[in-house]
Length: 395
Ligand code: AMP
Ligand code: MG
Image (cartoon, rainbow, N blue to C red; front, side, top):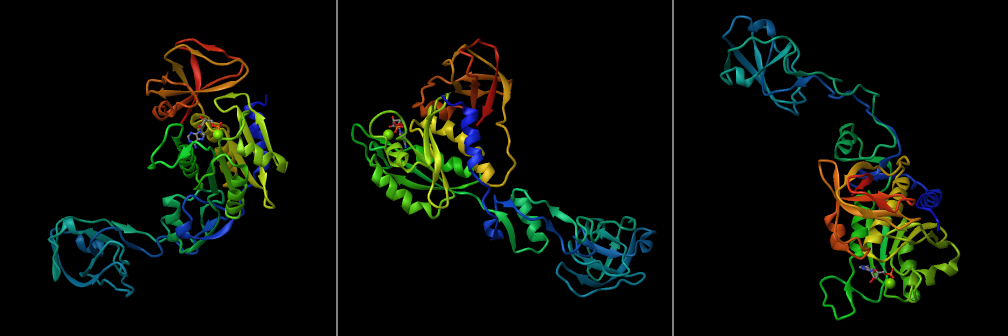
């Protein structure tokens, strides 16, 4: 049997980072910057008021209270350059450009709020409540490095330096296809022998959480030719494909039957539980990676976490990372098969303990849904004593 690590290494040796594209900002969330972003201007671009109040010469406010004439009003967006002479003040709003001559802003809360003249009750020091040009960013500064994942704040600074488009590696588009003659779309009635298709929902959602765009391309029953047709339809728009089911040792294994003859997809036994049967390879002239995951719901999900997620990271242009684990103490005795790495489902608590959920079968999706972590039991360990330390992958 192939080890989990060897299988992942084969996958990572095959998948490539997606080519960068010029993306509109609206399309850029969750993509990975493929260029450095610099600011063409200082930010803020001009000295402006940090508060609503009065632009003053601080020297005029030494004897308080003092009442001074308000000679003008300046709001954010004003492009007129005002000046404040000795003994005068200008009413000013947050974000408005500082008038020349003024060296401080008196917040409206320190005054009577007058519009013709204003009484100021507190002294002010020079520079008070002024946001200086270049205080955040100097012209020419790098504001984001290439390789940064664009989240809401990153999107904000890209727009904030005036850019409309960016060069970025897109979110991988991943087509998810279920196989199995027993599958029925949720919302429709079942007859005995049928079950609702859950894997395509789990896997599509997992793709999205992993920074990709998942697309459910439905279920194809157990007919290999229908699967090939469906793959043909979706290959043009896919950066990767995930299938579930149809890869084990029985009859009616459409994924194995359809893809084995192509010679570009390998079906192997990986030394893990759940998820032993795994297929991986490439399809078409563009060598689109395909992950042929086992059908049992827990198996396909665990396989996604171990193999597809790191591959998506690589496609997004993120640095390769090892699976992050934390150490926890198990609340009860555990068994694990010899020679296979187990990923048992558990509930990790804030006190550093992990309670294995009841129902460790690879079909027990409800138990998976209650878990928040996977307990990793190494290949050579067959028993874990209550209270022993284990490595845990958070979900
Ligand atoms: P297979 O790998 O096709 O032999 O499927 C293994 C088990 O997983 C069978 O019990 C299937 O009914 C179940 N299964 C396969 N695909 C799905 C799916 N999309 N949703 C829920 N269960 C599935
Ligand atoms: Mg099947």
